[in-house]
Image 1 (tube, each protein chain N blue to C red):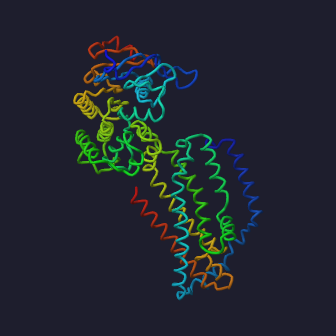
Image 2 (image 1 turned 90 degrees about the vertical axis):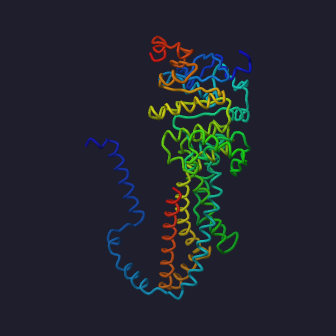
Image 3 (image 1 turned 45 degrees about the vertical axis):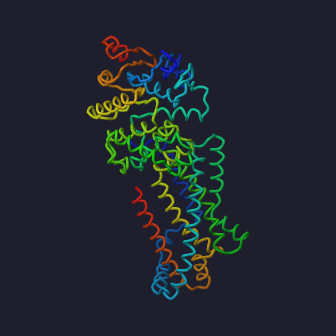
Length: 253
Length: 250
């Protein structure tokens, strides 16, 4: 028992209690988990007969979903990069500014995209623009925080070198920090892009357009085979983005 | 010594990192003349890096004053300090090059203190600046590596890029903070030969921290010895003997 400290036992008891409470709260059932025959039947019946004739329409809708996810996250990245320099402890000009911006990012991040989506659909009307704004605001806060953490953990050496040549504060920071963190920034970006594709589907279900809207329409009208076709397209889209992200990151490194 | 000859002057200079702790530098008084090649000796923690870093205001003083190129660093604004730093080249033990940039791009960053930030950000360099950068890369023997990313170079090559970056500043003073501490003896000797040649060609005031007494004796005109932040030796290499060495490395 040399590896186990007394406090580990306390942690284990606390975690076990939390698991039991979560099981009760979520109505967990072991028999329900093991008995998935209905789910398997559903998949077998509907995924075996995909509606290929819907492909042109679904591809058009998936382009809307991709556009929302790409523009929303890319614009968020462009804003998050300078914001992250203000939100990082080592590059912020003042403690008050650092805490202020970090708190603001936390506040925005605490609002789920679907809440942003509901607000924008109500205020701007149905359509992909509402979904775009929801994704943009949430991702500014997420990428802002993630990139700020990369800035804080970057090597101080090049920053000192830029100070020693007399470089301007911001130009020095950009040149000494950005090249160091760039592969990780891209990695975070592609992950957020992939998440944004899934999010824009959910936002589509509340009126944000695109593939999500088609998905919920098929679901509501019990057109499960059409819904399965849309799901397959979603899976292909996410895999393509994941593979592309991997290739780009590898080339950048 | 005339005022023009004085490049650096420290008067009662002290640095205290933490309140209550021993000073990292204690009442240092010394003057550096134009065109001197100085090596600073001392054990680890003797205050060598602190001493070097006070000269380009990377480390502020708590007491005393430091004048560089006839400017008292204590009274300068951030912009004025940047302007002084632009005239002081510095090379580092761990090179502090910018990863993912090429050798030539790293050398260009040495010009940043002399130019407006927007030109730096956009990467706009005049033909003369390009010529200067290539000239110094050629001087350190790395022109053929100009397009190579710096992380693909050896330690000695990286330090040469560091030297080219410092020289492209066209500095009045060159500082070296343990520039050969991470290098093997042969490469260290090559780096010192290069520093000495650059110093002689331009009458460049050069101050270098080093652990190796032999290297210091072979290349320096003047040696400064520090022990626990105090100046314990200041003289010519020929003035050093067993007793003075013991006062530095006791």
